[in-house]
Image 1 (cartoon, rainbow, N blue to C red):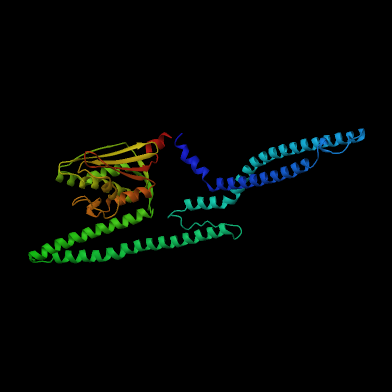
Image 2: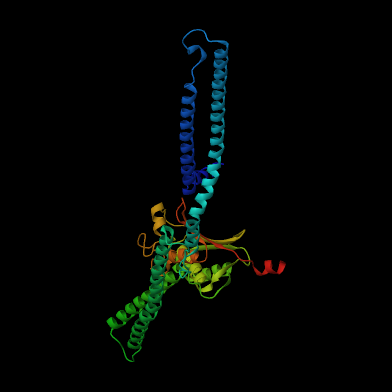
Length: 394
């Protein structure tokens, strides 16, 4: 019941309700003023009739007394008629006041209908369909001007998004080409016959490692950009339990090197619909994040479970105690906590930022929770699609 109070309060504060109250208030006030004028005029005409006892002079004759009696009766009839008129007018004003609320509600709805249409269309438009426009029809009034202004804003946003996506595609080509050239030059130098100076070998190894790091950073940036733009190439049903298991197997060397104990549990044939490439990156970053944020000899747990129409991929690991601000910073690109915690795959600071963008692009959410004992619990929730067993049963 308490949850309904904000919604009711919002309805009372809506523009339509305010227009209705204003219309009904003005109608009632004007009707009351008109009723007061009628009462004053009618009361004045009644008071102008003198009572029989107010006449002066000698006692009236029988005819005069009869006339006076008739006039007195006429004055009483007029007074009763005026009273009934006021009562009837008051009742009519009350009925028309209630009717004015209904008329005001209807009129306000007609006036605000274009605004509701613009609101619904604006909510429907996202980065994937910026080509749509409100296209408000009707006379060139204030609402038409507002719709045209929003259409102009959408056109500028579409141009900006198109330019940004084009830049991402161009940067992918322009940056990878010199990186490949430099990597090839380093490999050729190190592969030359004959002994090489120790300094050359050391420098070549460092340059090659830095080039690999830059290539991984570039790949992370491109993945993040595609996910943030909702670009899902080759969307298909993907088994999230298999992706999580594969990502955990790929970390076997790091697990053994740091003495970590890993456990996993998954419901069978848990599927989501989306890009296999991006979902693979999501699972890999989550598992790598749990390994890197851990302490030597620690533990981590990977769980994939289905609940209703959703799939939850949960990674939980031990480690240092984190504050709420530190947990919030983990999903921001290039934010690092401490000397080891980077929040991203291969130390790029992009890992959880990519996870958040990929989850959002697939209609899901990312939730981070700092464990009181130390460590982090990361939960990714994605919409579920029917698996092969469920499709066969159906």
